Image (cartoon, rainbow, N blue to C red; front, side):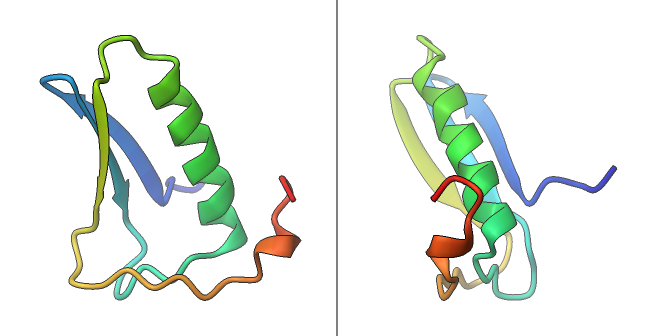
Length: 72
């Protein structure tokens, strides 16, 4: 089993999406799928009042061919 690259946690009614694909968190199809699942989890959690994202590194980069995602 591989580690997830998008982690979803909650802290005091805030949902946190953490991208963990160092060094620059380049989006991949795997990340898009995991992000979708994490957002669905957040939407289904009545304790979550807001949703934010963060990354342990200094950058988030988004060049990925979204059309190749399994959800496209």
